[in-house]
Image (cartoon, rainbow, N blue to C red):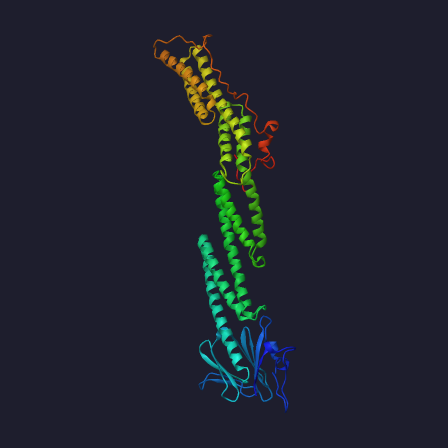
Length: 498
């Protein structure tokens, strides 16, 4: 007589049929020959039902080629339905026969009570029919569980197969640089994996992990690893983009790219980190990125300060003027960054930078004027020395320099435009007289040294007396206080600040 035992309803120690071993006697049935049935159950699965048969055992196939596996005279057939598979153990004198059939391979399950005992019928992999003899009582619950388990495992395994295919595709997309599509693919795989997880959770008893959930967990680890790899690749690409923008002095675009990279790293750290590969290396990359962003925040102001210092240090007014021009544009960039934003991302107090910008503009125009007046005075010297050709070249140089100074004044220091226009007119007159002399034409009296002429009071600081620069810590310590440290180097990746 066979039995069916629902282990959910069984309290205390496992039943003897799972723990017993050896043959039976005259009045008792035996168990298995090789060892207790419970030993066939793996650690990652849980027994749900036990069924036994003393005489009939298992029938595999219905034709003459079929096989019948019956227990020995003093042993039993013991079946164990776990949350992972259907174990069939047939005790014999010469050793047990064992079958392990995964639930995913089982379909067309039916129960039959018409034979005086119970019988379960199913097909394995949709092909061979199996008949397992057992008891009657509990047969309905047993077949219902087998049907539910089969459907759940088939559904989950089909999803997992699709997830694994998508993960392979995502890796291929990442390898060929299609980072956006790679992320879409791996996120799609995650959604499908969640659906598999829901099915697995519903399959087992509440609060307890079951074999199907553990099966999903193995693929989820692979998904996490792939997702981390895709996000890391996207972060590295964003860092590369940020560096390109930084080198082009597109600081806001660089910051946005670095922030995108930081977001990708944060997404990685939100994953179950125990299964993220190369986590320590990823943390190191994130730390380096933080350092680079800190340097980027100060880079625009450092660029301006570096040019400012170069201008102050220059002895040649022409060289100084070029550096003042660089400083002017750099300070303007500092003011324009994050325009209108509630919080500034870049170093530099706008009010203090604006004040310095006015001083730099004045120094720029003064340096340009010095270049122009030096050339004009040189022209006067050559004119007085009766060297009109040399005087003409110097006056042309002076005219070009005054035009440049006037253009700069109109751009950034309009108070000087009237004075510079007067000086430009004066050099134009010198040019006309010199050209007339060279052409042998009559020339007006040269009144350059007429004491009655009023020389314009330009009220422009000369290049020999530049206003304090950031190197003067007494007057401009406020502007440098926006920069951490005094090292002019910008960042460890090699970006320059000037």
